[in-house]
Length: 233
Image (cartoon, rainbow, N blue to C red; front, top):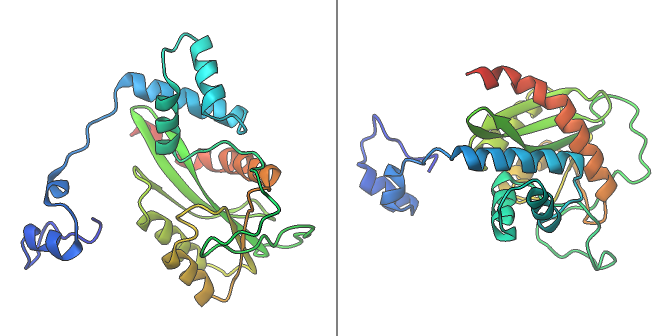
């Protein structure tokens, strides 16, 4: 969809849709604004998840019901999926080797980070807005907690992640790049940028629950002030 040229193109939209294998109707789709109720529920889910990142949909549903919100677990799961969040906890079968393509080993075990640009981390988080939400992707230097690069978007499409990675690498190159095993970070396009820069790639395994909680806390505390001014627009 990002490749569609809506103006100043020699190809009609119908032809562009055919060449890019996208639905013609999707070119004209105008997303509806979320309801005030949905915004309030998602904001509350975000608060609960920040306080207890090990809460899954079952516990979040139970807490919302205790607060008087009539909601099903299926709806909570859908909201969490749209928000890009998932409960953090050690998964089963941790001793089994991961055969997932494009997944790299975790390199930070027992590692002492002593200088800037030694280890960078990247992650995506949900940002509450007055009339909805956006997604924030950011690259952090783990030593200094300095935000190397960041980008906002209203969807979880891939381009805003690639833009953030490219901008970060234009300033410096870390020794190790750490992320989770999310689809954005195991994408061949994203990995190629790192491999071309000869960076060691590290990915949190499913058992690295405490590391993930640490990253989540640092990320939210350090990054949300960056977008505070957007709240007023």
